[in-house]
Length: 455
Image 1: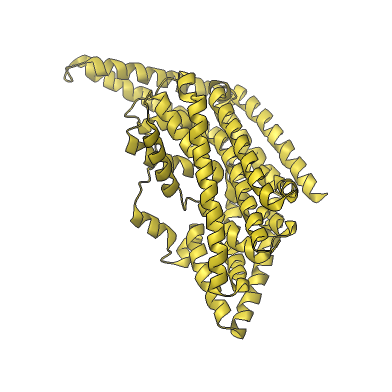
Image 2: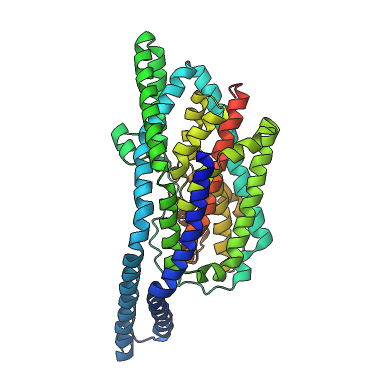
């Protein structure tokens, strides 16, 4: 009863958020949006005129430059006012996300240590680890390939006829390049406390693996540590229960802020791209459920039903991290062994982001299409493999996918400024990606439990 109530409250919050956001946008934010749009149009027009001038010392050039800086300032001032006006709504989701992030590090650490210590020997850890990674890599490859295939079929970039951003425009997204050194420093912690304070899931996993194996190997002395960790894990899960009661408020705040700022107009402008991406996500969901069906049979439907709350939370807050504690509880209720859940799930949050993976190929090729750049099949497959590597270890936080895309498209001479096309609708797309990530990780956990005979 409690579970269905939470689902209902989240759903009501979602609807109320859309209505409130729309009303607030029309009555309060719209005038600032109009000023921002006028300023942007003027800046583009001035840029065209500046590009046509050959003499940079002419009076016209200087006056255009002055006019441009006035328009840029107008845009910034109105953007700041708009941010201030929606601040009160986003505070609700910020508090919830902060509370969730407060829980995640100790929860991952304690549950994983207990899980590994219960698994016992390194051979078993290796066996479960290899099965888990096999599933993760297969799922990632399928997601990337599906994104690539569908974006080539739909060609949303050609169909939209969008006004392209200036090629020199700065999107404000920090690029991440493909560097082995960066990858290694992202995986291996230099301090467990630093890893925990930054919520670096992968680094916490590495330390917890060492800690768990070492604890199991010292025999009776280690049992005290395992009992203590188990108790701490249960305390944190209790805290999770309290925090989850705030989920509907967070959902309301997050949705209201998005709609209030962007308005419903952004949905109609990008309707083709958004609908094609969500249709692609539904196909990916069906593939994940089908793959799970081969292993779990009809229990796969029970699983999907039991994680719907967690998926709704991830959908509404645009981060799969927000649903982590909830998924952990539901997987154990579903019948997965505690040691498998606490081992597979944290790894999934670094290695198995199915929704984000599909978005990476989908969005990268969409940008190429928008600039009318033809990428050969070889180029597309190369991009797919690069994305496969660069995305590993990207935590389930908002905008992580955009950071990876920014680092990858530069290698194929696609203007990074194209990301400006996605910035406005990214929160809407991130909602679907996050919910898909939750489904993918839950399915992986259930499948590995079944393979290990622990379901």
